[in-house]
Image 1 (tube, rainbow, N blue to C red):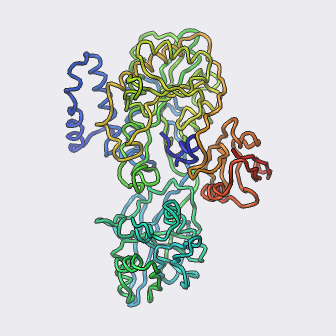
Image 2 (image 1 turned 90 degrees about the vertical axis):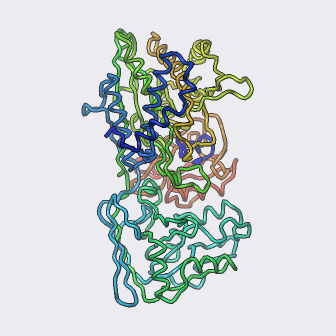
Image 3 (image 1 turned 30 degrees about the vertical axis):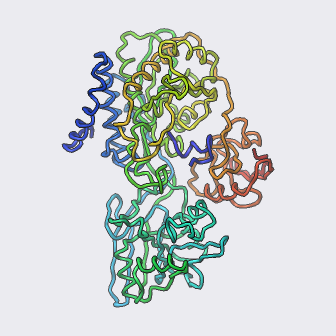
Length: 636
């Protein structure tokens, strides 16, 4: 489920198929871990659970690398799903006769090698070449970098922080960084201490961010930035930030940004007569006074070769089971996203936004696996009468529902002939309701067509779920994209939990019997919708109000998109009944100003909105089809 998109509906921005020997051992041990739990199940259910485990343990294996963008694991997961579609008997639906619908999402790629070169006081040069897809231990370019070259002498600028609001600490105080390269530590002083000098934890987090530090360096006219791990981030391995980790960021700095190892940084500090990093960190922690200074005798040449825009390739995987009879020219879409957050970081809900493989078993290996099982079951129905069934695995959901948005923009089957969409996202943690003690399932979109409520009641008589229903079809997963196109939707899920967007979301924690029950329930819902004579009619239901921005401020009620030109914030879609829609803001508009202040990107937009209050009327400057407009928006 999209952590990025969850914010607009809870808080704004809440915020090939083969196993190696080791993986087989891991898989076999895991599959056999709970055989005792299935001993009393009937043969059919055991067979289903065996299939579910086989698919889910593959998709959520550590070898899939968290199925993040730019990972080989996401590519292999897509290939696996396509192979399963073929085995099941689904026909390819893509225009090129394959199961894949390729598209691109916003971000940055390294299109050729980038280099960083250090010349020391002894006249000797150390040069490092950073090649696309390859890692070296001492240097890398970060995806937050600009394209281009920078040269200059080298300056140590501590943590690169200016606490202007607090007036207590400034790494740039008395430091000349004009047209120089600044070396900056990650994080902030006095980690874990209450007397860290910051106003509060949120303030510390904001000023510690890489983007804030780059922006601060730009304000001080630095020519480039070199990050170094602080003692905590270095831990034992001093691992450099992987390029892919930040590749989907929406921040584009104006100066080159690299990262080097502490070992390399220490060697230059010592050669210039300064204390090493650990001693500087200890000194700052001692009296909260900067240890910034010129690293005498060193000069740097940085050359970053990057391309920013809609450049990251991803794929939806789409297959179809043909229908027959008078309804065969219409379709039901059964979808689930198969991507996840890779190694976490900004997508992680773990403490400190941990960087480690997030296997994404429940989110959304479970939904993808359930979708495959549903495809298998319907494919086994010979001479099935009714609408065709389109099974779809979406990509880039975690980045902002981009896979489903792309499909709805360029559908492989006409949307006007699509009768309904069923979405499965996080269906692997079925558990009892605290009050009723019955299995609890959440259903969104129950009010998007007349008769959906009665249908759910009818089918649930055999399953006795406690259902928590939301009538609106707008929410933090791919069904929302279809609801925005006025297609009736139903979204089945089992709620968030303590492992959501954490490395601990692993296949061994999945309730496979519960998944089987949800699949049986879903198959009856799909069967009814595929055969009902009258095509379901869409009913617009306003999304439930659930808060403001992630910092608690007002919201406009729109889904941000990506701008190739990096100026302003693209409007991907608006929520009916919310301030943006009421004011006349539309999809494909671009927000460029708020109360006269320039909105350069999403980060600036959020900073400005944090200063606004509910009930206030603000002026939003937009660009619509090349024309500048200004709209009054009353915040709610």
